[in-house]
Image (cartoon, rainbow, N blue to C red; front, side, top):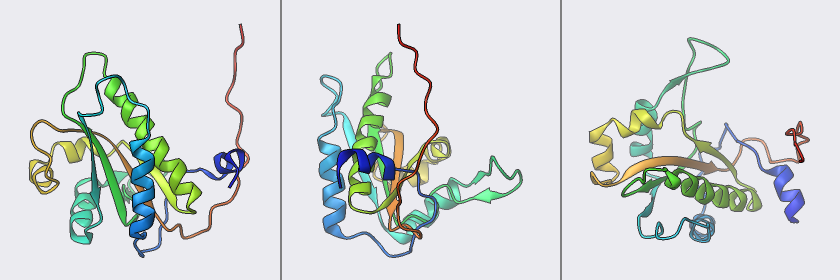
Length: 175
């Protein structure tokens, strides 16, 4: 897929097939993450945690349920049924929190690669405070006290195939 076309196909997918992505697809996504630009010296502190175990994913889903913004009172699966979750964490956070930008770069690289592979994906953010507060799940995720979950990425086979989407423009000010 050409780069411009790839950008038009990239979107947040919120419905997935139960079928797991292949090991080859996962490796390509992880390789894309390795190529993300990070702040000087942050590469040794960054960590990716891949969760594909169904029971553990279900525990995370239970912990991270959130209320729908569009439909108050409706409880949502914050992972949207995705079979793969990748958490981005760091061992320490600097005063300026540049590590959050690093996590965004890592996730965007993974999202572009997932889209290139025809997979659906979504950036996970809002439910993560609940996960960070659950010491039992953090232990199961093998995240020691030093690791702080910054962001998450989900992916899988989308229920509906990806397609190019026309988006409303972001305003631009030129000076």
